[in-house]
Image 1 (cartoon, protein in one colour):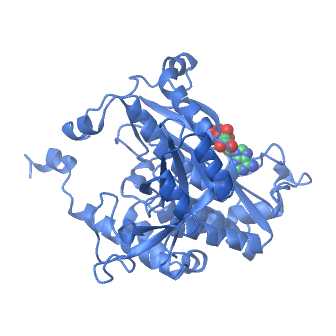
Image 2 (cartoon, rainbow, N blue to C red):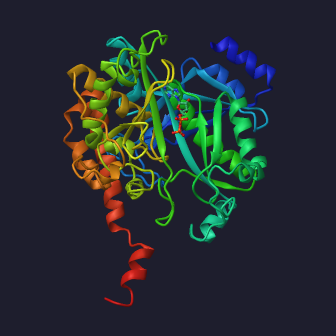
Image 3 (cartoon, rainbow, N blue to C red):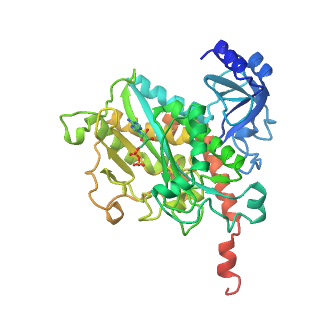
Length: 451
Ligand code: ADP
């Protein structure tokens, strides 16, 4: 797609506004709404954006002390350069389109801490090794009959789910919700994000919506846009959506399982497939699994980036707790799915729905590539419940633990770059400290009367 195609679409669809933005460190789509004329005039050069989008936390509190974007530098501009391949008409908003941007420095170089650039870096390593990557994130999401004001008024507690029962996979319950969920899926399809399947999940108001796999960069863009679109569409229908990894401690969490496969550079032939071997898993696929497994603890910060992410890792809740892999085994961290050359893939079950897709994809691919480069061999696959496996290494159980491992990771520096690692470590140190100081409802209920 070039600027002429874009301007034709703008004319054809009577677009007045273009949403221009990219992923911040949390994976939130942030940017500006531009008039169509202004967008067309500046699309080739890009648009200025205050660099604070990389300098505050998820609650928009300015951190101030990060290596990049801080008071000393004076919060200058970065340049949002639209990737015109991502230009799309927004079907649920009259006269609107959207585009995903790369962030550049004032000198026109890629901003090294931008999550989209971090993924591109790892994709470049794959390309140099003769590979391309295809991915899909399966995000679970919970819907509520609430709005922004009612959430605040209720202090995010005692919320009314879209539907009250569990009813996982129940066809008639999903049909009852069809005016709501079906509308979201139809809009996503019309937006260019192909929905393969969706179903009631294991929780009140909970759904899983599967997007068809695509080249890794496109898949990450689609995952970010899907989250943003789902929130917008739910709000248009009087609802709210959350992708929190664990919304309450007494219900299942929301996974963000990451399906991935490696192909020849032209994307035509899966290098994971070898019919002569058990489960048709090539030797290279075994190395990929081994690399993913060994790097999982040090890269966990990029799969589970929030304090809340770690509350999801509870045995027998479909979330992994240890460094295991298995063939069609949903109790392991990695599930091998075979079947055909186009379908053979690894499902990384560690990421939650709260992940930043660019960073989780980058970490997963980097882990696999590391395994291939070093010719690593995986342990035998887990048979039966991985939760019962006492010998497998444990995954980090909290944000501080994951942060400590990431801070020491040489592989993180190699694959994601020193600038990104420094920024992300400082960014997560802030989050850990914020949480350390927070006094919660749980503490009041537990200690108020008794201590
Ligand atoms: P579940 O874990 O819900 O059973 P599935 O096994 O049905 O999920 O996997 C569905 C996801 O896997 C979809 O998003 C689909 O597009 C994706 N997928 C299928 N083939 C590949 C592949 N070769 N590479 C990456 N993802 C793939």
